[in-house]
Image: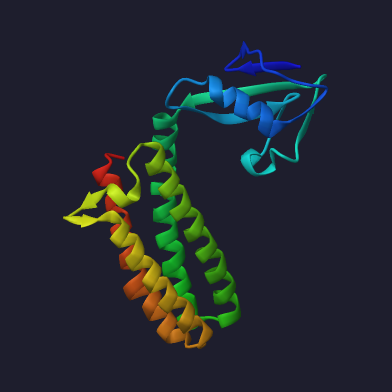
Length: 199
């Protein structure tokens, strides 16, 4: 089996059939401090980014070729933070549109957009937490205006609970108000993080 790490051949223990997760663990053990695998290519084809979840189900044969791309964690974190900053701007536009839709359009269409928006918001918060952890600055340790940043996250989560309750009550005008006047300002507070981190 041919294994490359940043285009350099690497020797790892293999058998006739191997789990990707086992090979990945061996490669990770050889990486310098503060580096991580950012991409895996199997026989010339990029694998999905969820290889950590599917690694136990992905089998590698002796005839296969694996190429790992490795980067410094801090570089990856900054790139993720730049992407999440842009994504936050898009989220604010999306939720502004959702609030307007609940006021003037069919609630079925607005609810479908709302569900997609909440899913995107959850992805955003996870990426934000992962990126700051990669930087060595977990959200729980960052202070903004003498307040732990995690309190901003907790405030948003509390508002999201209120948003979900209001949605379940089918009070569309109230839902639009909560989104526009409570949730969006809480999201804007989360944007303060980027100035603190110089992103």
